Image 1 (spheres, rainbow, N blue to C red):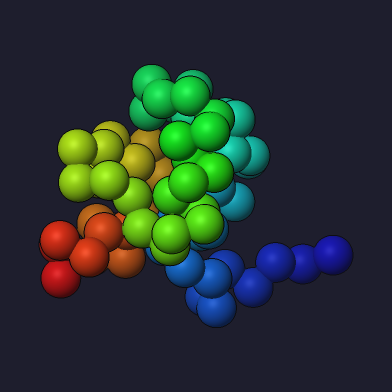
Image 2 (tube, helix red, strand yellow):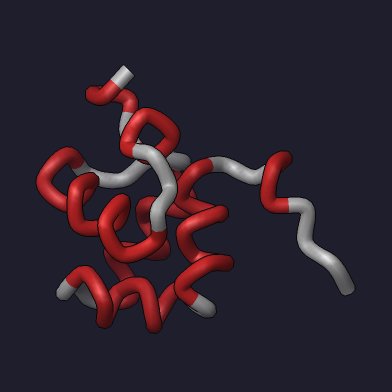
Length: 68
């Protein structure tokens, strides 16, 4: 199955790039439940936006409403 990354939210793209929610959590030093909350809300907390952007290459503008 192919994933169409362009139609996903920024955090969903980041999860796909990282490989899983757990792997993204490990890379940005949060618990997996935090990543699950990000996926549910559709945005990353402002405190972790730079880390997620650095680890996945997804632009911060797609990850957090505060960066628009």
